[in-house]
Length: 182
Image (cartoon, rainbow, N blue to C red; front, side, top):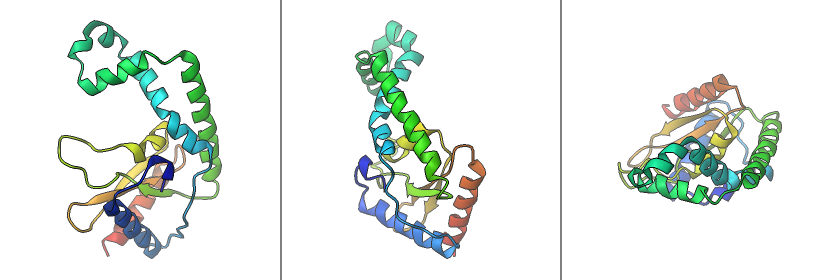
C-alpha cells in the first residue's frame, strides 16, 4: 500500500481489493507487505533526483526561455536551482540502497501489486497524482497497469516486477486480467 506515499481514495482501495481477490482466484498467493526502510527514504528523496536531473536536461531552455516554460515545469526548475551536487549525490546513494533492498525483496516475491493512482482523477486536464508510481520509476523496475472494472470509471492496479523481468510483470498482469474477466 506504500503508506509513505499517502492515502489512496476509497475507490482505489476497493480496486486493489478486487485485484487481490482476482489474483488469488488466478492461483496467486497474496500477502500484505510493508516495504523495507530504504524504499520509503528513496521515495522521499525522489524529488531531489528528479528536479536536479530535469535542470541538467533542460538547462539551456531554462537559461534562455524561462518565461516560455509551462508554469509547473518552470517552478520545478526554479526549485532545482537551490539543489547542490552533494544533495543530489546523497539522494542517489539512498536510491541505490533502495534498489539493493528491492532486489532482495524480489528473492521472496514474484511481483508486487499496488495502487496505480490515488483514485478517480478530476478530469482530462491532468494525468493524475503520480505518487504511487514515483518509487517504481526511481527503481527502474517494470510496471504494468491492469484496468479493474468496477463502479463508474475504471481504475487500475500496478504489477511491479524485478528489474529486467518485464516478462514476469506482463504474465502476472495477464493472469490478473483474465481472473478479473471471470
